[in-house]
Length: 234
Image (cartoon, rainbow, N blue to C red; front, side, top):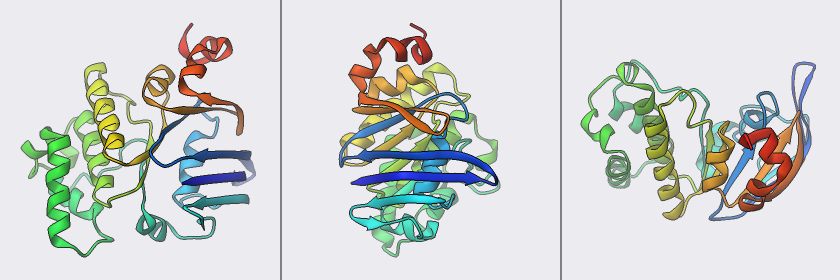
C-alpha cells in the first residue's frame, strides 16, 4: 500500500532522514519506534507532504506522492494525526469534525461518519458543542483521531497518540486504534511507548538517528534482546 525508498529529508542543514526504506501492507498496523530525534515524526510528515524530501521516493497504491501538496495527499486517502493533537481550540467538537471532512461533498456520508466517530468515542458525543480548547488532553486526542477519520482515510498516520496522557486513557485510545484497524483502516504508528506500540502492531521498524536499524514482526522485535534493552526496559 505504501512504499518508501531511500528517503532523505533535511531541516535546513540537518539531515533528519538518511536514506530510509520501508513498506506498509494494506490492513496492517506498522509502528516506528526509536529515541527522540530518530526521524519518526519526520517520516510521517514526509508522507503527508509537510516535509519535502531531499531525495528518494514515496509511493501510495502505486502513485508517487513525493511532489504532491498535503491537500492532494489527504484527498488520495491518507490522514495524519500530528504530535501534540493540534485541534482548533476556538472551535467546537462538531466544527473540528466537520473541518476533517473538508475534502468531501457528501453530506449524508459526513453525517454517518460523525456518528461513527461518536460511537468510537462516546465522550465526544457528550461534548459535541464544547470548545476543543477547554477539553482534557485525552479528549483532545480522541478529537484529533476523530477529525482525521472524517476524511475517510485508507491509511492513518498517528504520531505519539499516548503522549502526556494518563495510562487509563491511553489504554482506551489504543483499544480504539485496534478497532479502527479491524474496520479496515491501515495504520502507521509512531509511539514513544515501544512496548505498547509493539503490543498492537503487526510489524515494526526501529529508527536510530535517521536510519532504520532493524525491522521485523512486532512479536520478534519484542523478543529481541537489543530492542528490549534499549526500548522496552528489559
